[in-house]
Length: 405
Image (tube, rainbow, N blue to C red):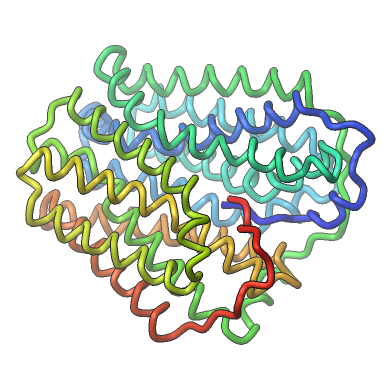
């Protein structure tokens, strides 16, 4: 997800010609960052073995990434307010490279956490300005197409990161996979250096404006629902590989196949989410976490059946693809007059949820085994569905379009 910092200013001062090479460079960077974020999901078991720690402890590396991204999403724009956005973007690429290299050579849990924290800074900071970058690189009439290209990097990462990490990890080891992620970061750095033009900083970003959104009526409860749905998702998904191995009995190739199915289903869910939203925003916001909770309960009961697990995770992936688009639509519809700061608050809430979900899932995993995070995630997802169904009201849509994610 991303906040749309400086978006109005960016659109009002669109360039004379569209810089599509730079747009594709930004999209590639999105894919690289998200791929690096998702890699531990498919490499959790070998990472734990290589560092002589439990899978639950290894999962905390995901929590640390999300925790660092919280602060970056809230404060990066104001902290870099006087810098050319081109230099800031290149700096995030450098952080991606350093993070991947530190993770690849980590000889201790501490070094691993430092590496993943650097990734969180790059991830949160980049997301805080990705949309406004696209808007400043193209003419106003081309903005929707540019945003579609940039956010397409998310779907690409969801499709390839987990299965590719699992497959390559069996061949070159988990350290080799993160070394390849560093190489992708180098390509990203070079591509952006060659294509992204100078983009002087604009506006006066103030972190307090983001927090002020919480004081508006009708905002705290939806943010709680956002926290619950993303926290529930990460409580389980962070530990999906141990579940597939220990409960379902999948080998490395089987894990890669199931994660590929999940990624493809997620891609289609994101692509087709507008059909669900046309039938009702509140219904979609409530139904999606309810379906995910039911999927989690089904996994807990049918985890020993590989065909059933594959189908359930396909349904899970499809439904997860709908969730961020639905909540982005809610932000633009309910908080459209202050969408930039509302988006920043949403990013921070999601990253906080990812942090707490991954951390709680790790604790439950160590206490109750691989099925524990599934049940913990189901409780959070059910809480999100109930919060939306009985505690939220939404206004009718005044537009036919759906917010881009």
